[in-house]
Length: 309
Image 1 (spheres, rainbow, N blue to C red):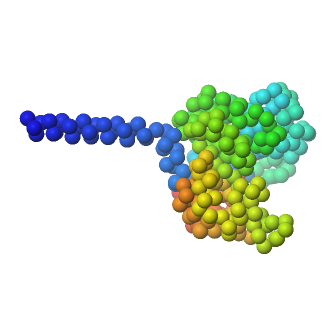
Image 2 (tube, one colour; image 1 turned 135 degrees about the vertical axis):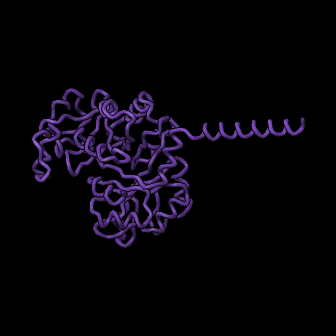
């Protein structure tokens, strides 16, 4: 009888343990675990091959099997979340002025594809002409949960209310609990606002290191989010890790290296994945992979995928 009771107890404990493991193995925890592995991040889609931030660029990257589709979120004048990098329209459309001064209908009337022909003649395609600006809803409707999304809150000071609108859409499409989204920003306050809106949303703190105006030999971070790479310490990384799952950083400034393997290892030791932007040449991709980066942003995901596979 005692042996039977002991076996029953062990069986119940094993079942409870299995249930606990299964409960912790959610899509969101799986996504966070995956960040420890190498991630191929399609910068504004396959933007070296098709107009950036358009469905054509995202479809190509998705077809190739990237880990994340990267995009910039802004607000139209009537509060729609649109996918567009620049604060002004001139570079990648036939419009002019600030994007947030136009309604979605007005933005939809613009051609965001034709500019690509002159800039990238080797990839020119008449089908790109007349391409409309994308909304976040349209991107989610098109790809659903067949991929992951890496979204930047672009120029939050020019897009008041962006964080609330973004979280509302992420929740409506169940992108957070299903482990389908990272949100990045250079603006620490924007990230903290996002954390307050939904503490489960995984965040990435973007960093940009360049020489100080006062001392060209000293590197500084342009938003003063951290000290320069040579002065950064565990406490600095831990402060970011309190709200973020990783950092996105440049590796080079005007041909000079700004981070090294020790920087990457230190960030990782303090719980942060390290993603480097924007890397387009295979030699540099290989160098950063050898340094231990957890992922690279690239306009040419096909080149990076060849090295990863």
